[in-house]
Image (cartoon, rainbow, N blue to C red; front, side):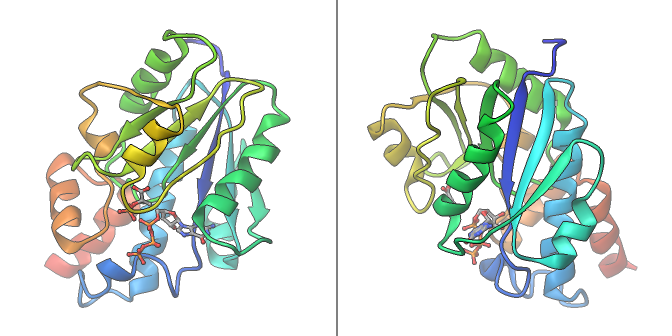
Length: 212
Ligand SMILES: Nc1nc2c(ncn2[C@@H]2O[C@H](COP(=O)(O)OP(=O)(O)OP(=O)(O)O)[C@@H](O)[C@H]2O)c(=O)[nH]1
Ligand SMILES: C=C(OP(=O)(O)O)C(=O)O
């Protein structure tokens, strides 16, 4: 897919309350730095994907907004402040203005490789027309990516058990060997698994600081 036909929505929670299950995973690193690094690496990988025309980051956090600002990134204040799905809906409404495909992606994918995201987006666009698709996380119960064709509402149902919820809502699961896309980081064990895949530079710098 050579054309940039996708807008990707990435909600990021306020750093002080984000990724609470990960708190203490890197004892020498302030938790907010770790949460910020995960988001920064995720957004950088999305920006590097040739299929992506734009990124919409939905956040109330000024540090996140400052860190992700770059070409093709639009920061939208999480004005509803009503949870992850409300943030996805807001971002999707903004992204729909682009007129292409819209994808919602979680911001906790620090090992994400642009080539894997590109492959997943390509598979979605080449699949059955008019249908929402999702990519489950590594354990299979959650969702890392939900995609909707132009004109179809994203209808996000993220949260515990979201893979079942998305399928029940009519989205089709996408099979594919994309370990860095599926590797969301909720716990210290997830972070270790992501490190084995290869972390993006922001998160890698923090884990290196711990080692040193
Ligand atoms: N803008 C926004 N983003 C959110 C919100 N809730 C979660 N997110 C983001 O959505 C992604 C996936 O959510 P979770 O894995 O549940 O993250 P979390 O709520 O920060 O983590 P826990 O506290 O451990 O449950 C993370 O990258 C969060 O930053 C929200 O209310 N608003
Ligand atoms: C937000 C989700 O889950 P988790 O918090 O486990 O990443 C999800 O998978 O929809």
